[in-house]
Every structure is written in structure tokens, then in C-alpha cells.
Length: 160
Image (tube, rainbow, N blue to C red; front, side, top):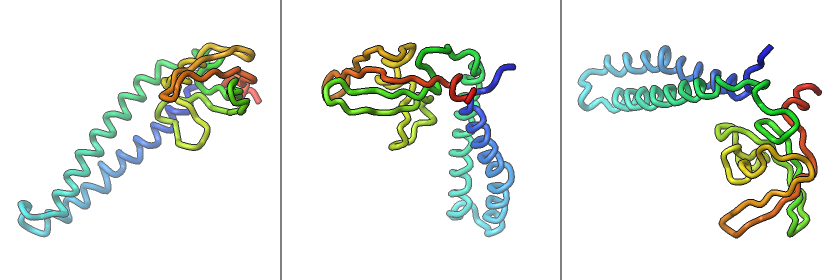
């Protein structure tokens, strides 16, 4: 059995919410605004139409990202090495600080939650690495080196 990536379900929920607003809520707002008369000077109508355009564009972007991500499934992610969904414990070799990150797609990154985008410099440096490896990452403040102390892959996390 192939399992979808969790991000796909999250994007599908977002898309459903957008579609509901586009197909149910906004048409009501637009119709009410139309009833107020002259559309040239109707701020409520113009705001609703502008929102409709923005939501349509966002829905299209989400649909495209779902199509892109649909080629992946849990079994397509390499097991035994760092990849999407891995929890990684690192030691900064200069400071000794221990950091824990979750490797995620860019859409899933939330500031301060310990997530790192798979496409970021750190995410790219960690891909396909394993416990005991040392990685170097170029940052605006210079190159930083990390030792991979521990890796829990998405396969291990789903098994537990």
C-alpha cells in the first residue's frame, strides 16, 4: 500500500476551504453587493471581486503543488538516511549547541517550530546523510559545521 505524504492532505484541506469560500460564501457577498445598485462606486462589490481573484489564484497554486507532490509517497522516500519527514539531532561543532529539526517541504515550515525546509541550505546539506556524518552549511555569517547525532526517518516515525 502506498501512503500519501501528510502535506498533501493538509493542502487538500486548504483547497477545500478556499473552494467553499469561492463557490458558496463569495457569490452571496457579490450578489448582496450588486443589490446595492451602481457597481462603479460599490466598494463592497469591488472588494469581493478582488478577493475572488486572489482566492482563485491561490487555489490554482495549491492545485499545482498537489499535482507536483502527488508523484511522491512514503515508499518513494529513501529509508535509512535523512529525507523528508526525518527528525534530526545535530551538534554545532563550533559551539557544542545541540539542535533538533524536522525536515519538511517549504509549505510546512513554521517559524520557531523546529522545521527546516528540504530546499534550504541546511536541508540540502542534510539530505541522504546519516548519523555520525558531518555537514557544512554556508550561511550569511559564514560556514557552519554540524555533526549528525541522531536520525529518526519518517519510516521509523510512522512505524512507532
